[in-house]
Amino acid sequence: MDCDNFLQWRSEYSVGIPEIDKQHQEIMALITDLLKLCREDNNDGKQQSFINLVLIITEHFQRHFEAEEKLMLEKNYPHYENHKKRHDQLLENIKKMTEKIINGKQQMSLLNIVIFLREWFVENIYGLDKDLGDYLNKNR
Ligand SMILES: [Fe+2]
Image (cartoon, rainbow, N blue to C red; front, side, top):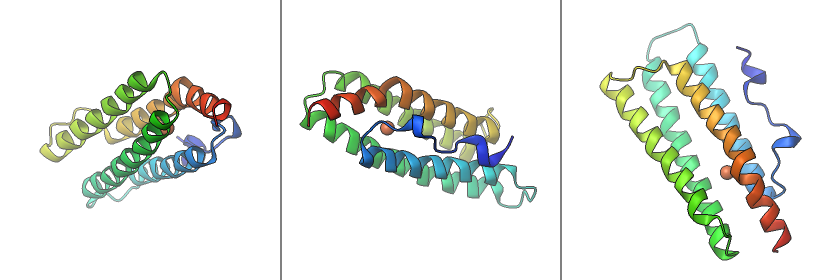
């Protein structure tokens, strides 16, 4: 898998709200870092570095979701509940995955965790964030 093309920003990812796009770009860069880390040949301390980076990514997700949820509430976004539910589900999933890695009970490989994060993220942009962006642009 090519690290540089794994999750590179493309204009079609834009949701039309610069603040949200910027946060998405930061998260994409971090997920790409996670892929690079998991592809390193040196295994010393890899798991711990992986966990540390996942924790940083989780914090970014948390802050980003809070920012999106704040915008949704301010603008009376009609699909707030559904969108927030998706955010909460992801955070819960990441926390469970991280705990399993720490306890040595994670069945998924590190690479598959990175792929899961990428799939979730891209799907979320197309499935939910673009709708939100359209709404926010129409209701300034
Ligand atoms: Fe988002």
